[in-house]
Length: 226
Length: 226
DNA sequence: ACGTGTGAAGTCTTTCACAGCG
DNA sequence: CGCTGTGAAAGACTTCACACGT
Image (cartoon, rainbow over the protein chains, first blue to last red):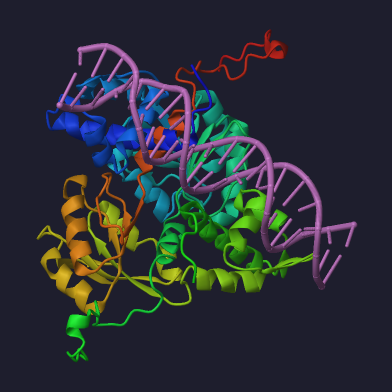
């Protein structure tokens, strides 16, 4: 199995997978790179190039079999199996994660929820019991869990990450608004809604003129004062 | 003001901003590109290059003033002002968004929450009343709101996006696990935790040998059965 | 004809390496 | 001296354009 596929490609594959699942559900058998591209918001060449890193899955003049491509993407992304996950942090963010059903639906099973706060420990949470974070390391090692979700305040994110890494975690979904440092063999995916918003506002004009949406020359003579 | 700064640079600026805020809170006055890079998880050259798109903010031999850089980033990212936001979808995801205090703390005010489901309309939600989505378009236009958060099922994401765009929305934070098509002058930032997880599993070995973490020669003779 | 797979070209982004300033 | 800002080089990624198979 080849290494050194661009990371940006790996991030697009789940998007293709998502589009294909939707197509399969609508009964579509075959899809062209053009159609898949439109559905995934990229170019057709990009779809073909991305897939070509892994093999030749299409039929010339025809397109790609939706079922075949789904199965290849499952294999490439290691989605043929389910995955155990631990969640660190049972605050409002962590609780929201336990209530997000799509993770379970896609084979990501939250096996433990840890917190540090005695008021939260032993409370029930969507079928799970919040456990003391002091149990975390031993349980992760024993159960061979390799994926963690961090949902703690930024001030404790690094120490949590350190302990996760020591316990054998190799992939982290980080909701803490902080950059965490990990060894090269551990992957981190950061999700920070505030940072996302702040990159969006860059593209907005700073001052809006309220109640005055487009000042086209046609409306020059119209007074639009509220 | 210049256009055509790489998008990847724009996505890093909020991360620098976040690091700098933390430094300011710890009383740090001056920071080198090296230190900021470490804190943000990038290289020092990258920090300097990114900032150089916007001006010369550093002092040679010294570094960057934390306060100055924060203020420049606020200006660049249009964070000098607060922003009004609408949230579409009052399901569990939408409710989690209203309970996430960091948006408000960073000046993003959710002014309306819309839903389509009569059972949710008029319920209270963290100080907001869920409104009928049929009111959405008129309110967004009237109030000149330009940022929306989509938290609806994927099947309705596109039609919601279309209506948001017609109403004047220019930036969308999309939590729906679906790609939405918008005109060029509208920005979309997608957040899909399942897609994030699926890109992480690519890097994990597909089969784990439970209860046997590293088979180093040193521990060959030790029985590690629980 | 149609649509894939891919060399080659083009563009974008990162990194090197160092001049220059405080 | 230390650290910024930046040309130039390198590297990564995307797009063009078309040969080829069906």
